[in-house]
Image (cartoon, rainbow over all chains, first blue to last red; front, top):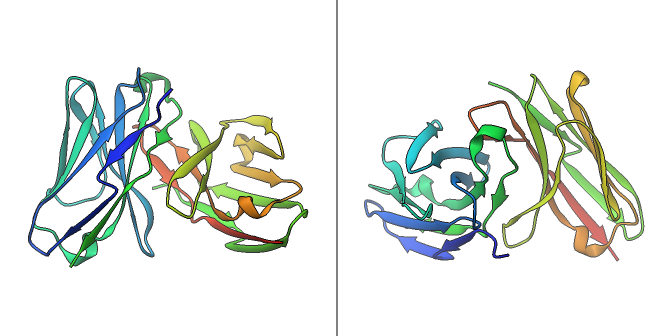
Length: 114
Length: 108
C-alpha cells in the first residue's frame, strides 16, 4: 500500500512569490493535515481538510491557505512568501476524523525562501 | 493550550544500550502517537497509544493517561535508531500537538 506522497521534494522561491505544495493521502483516507517544521520552532499544526472542507486551522496568517480535491488530495498555498516561511512542510492523512484516528505522514517538502 | 514536554532533550548511547524516553502532557488527551524523524525529515509512525502498553520488536511504549505521561523504551539500540523522537497528542479538533523532541545518537 502506497504511503502519503508529497511534491515537490524541494522548492526554492524568493520573497514575495507564491508557493504551491501538493499532497496525496493514503488510499481510503479522507482527512489531510498540514504541519510546518521551522528551525527552532518545532512541529506546528497548519490546516486540516476533510471531505473537501477546511475543518480546523492553526495559528497562521491568511497567506497560508489550501484546498482538498474530490480525490482527497490537497494543495497548500503560501502567498507573499517571507523569509521565515522557510521550513519543512509535512502532510499527513487519516481515516475519517470522527474516530480520532492515527495520522500518517509523507516525506515532506522543504521550502527555502531567499 | 496543552503543553507537551519530552525528556531528555538529548541522549547519547553506545550501540546495544537500553533507553527510556518520556513525554509529559499538561491536560487530558484523546490519543497519543510516537514518531521517529529520520535524517531526511520524514516522520515514521512508531506507536498509536492513547493508553496501555504496546510492543513492536525492540521498541515498546506505555501511556498512563490518568497521570498524563507516556514512555518509549528502546532496547539493544542500533545506530539506525539515531534521529529525533517525538510524541504528539490529540486533544480533539484533530490537530496533533507535538512535544519538544528527544535527539538520540547511537554510536557504534
